[in-house]
Image: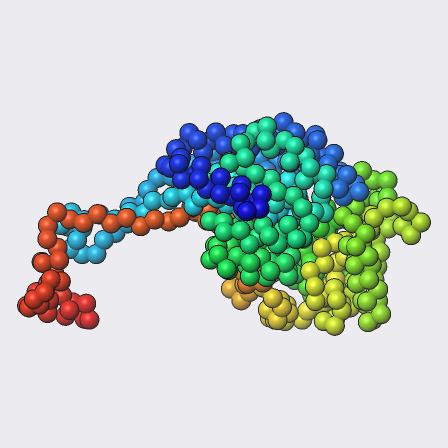
Amino acid sequence: MTEMQTILAVQREAFMAELPVTMAVRLDRLKRAAAMVRDNAARFCDAVSEDFGHRSREQTMMTDIGASLAPIAHAAKHLDRWMRRERRAVQFPLGLLGAKAWVEYQPKGVIGIIAPWNFPVNLLVGPLAGVFAAGNRAMAKTSEYTPATAALFEEIAPKYFAQDELAIVSGDAEVGKAFSALPFDHLIFTGATAIGRHILHAAADNLTPVTLELGGKSPVILGASADIAKATERVTLGKMMNAGQICLAPDYMLVPSANEAKVVDGIKAAASAMYPTLLANADYTSVVNDRHHQRLTDWIADARAKGATVEVVNPANEDFGAANSRKMPLHIVRDATDDMIVMQEEIFGPVLPIRRYDGIDDAIAQVNRRDRPLGLYYFGNDDAERRRVLDRTISGGVTLDDVVFHVSMEDLPFGGSGPSGMGAYHGIDGFRTFSHTRAVFKQSRLDVAKLAGLKPPYGAAAAKTIARMIK
């Protein structure tokens, strides 16, 4: 038995011995998870920055530390209500005869969490809010691309949790492959769609329920009624945060043909105001590693070779080629066509294709001919047009008049659709994802089977029941 299998067996044994998991125990685990993050916030910021080559402390405090504490606090606040059993209706006339039905939310057991590198604290700790609130134990696999953060988790987690409550597993892709093949009671993976397919295959052999939080090409539709200055600033903020390395980053923009030049100017102005310099700017994040930097460089070259006009937003005219840095300025790709890689793959970097559209139905058609995205963003004041976009597209979630923000609303479910993911978590939806919804029926004291004609020998009562059933 491997070490991971041993940990899983120990966790499951401890889970079964503990049942039922009280509210006090759940709250205590949530409290310790919050303390683990809060007490070590500065060290996490340093570790994440080391892993990236550079990431601003303020960004990590917001997107990894604060964003980990918020779901834990939300779960603790609402746990009493979430745990209550829900009364359900019973068919007439059973209710009149004293029968009752309800649903109880029971913990599943041991939950596997596979965290990605882009938000290596939040996307490991965030799911723990729902996992612990639901009364489970957890094994969490860190990303091999963020080794400093992984080492810090391995060091500090045992100070807050016994290994049979929370275990941290680190290692390369082979470790990840073995981890995903463990017979968990539920597995949640956040990462690339291609890897998600492998995760689903591995989990299938154990019939492990899986939540996949993937990515895709999240579009921005700029309506003709949109405030261009406001919209371009918000899109630029979302695109350049974490240097675009966000599963919900605006991946491409659809703009009315007449407004393209104004949109490009607005993006340039917004990017220059937020990041007047880049190389020595502590606010701007590096691309995580050389492989991803080269991938983005190759994709930009591919777009240029296929006819795109690429505008580089470099306000201080810095020499990135001579810099020993993976920082990359925002590249605006105009005249982006479907044969360019930037319009085929999720970009995950500071590259923003812009496409024109003529009429909102054209924009909708451009979205719908691609895989269903994780996020969709619409800017505009036209109520009918907004409603048409919502009605005629399918995406994991939507933010209107901004980008990304729906993910931080604790009471909204977060998840994808099709290639952008399956299942959802956050808030009460996370609690229910990591709970088994157990149906309970309590029969009346009366002999209902006899009254309904369910007992042989069948006669008039059975005939009446059948007549009612097929009416």
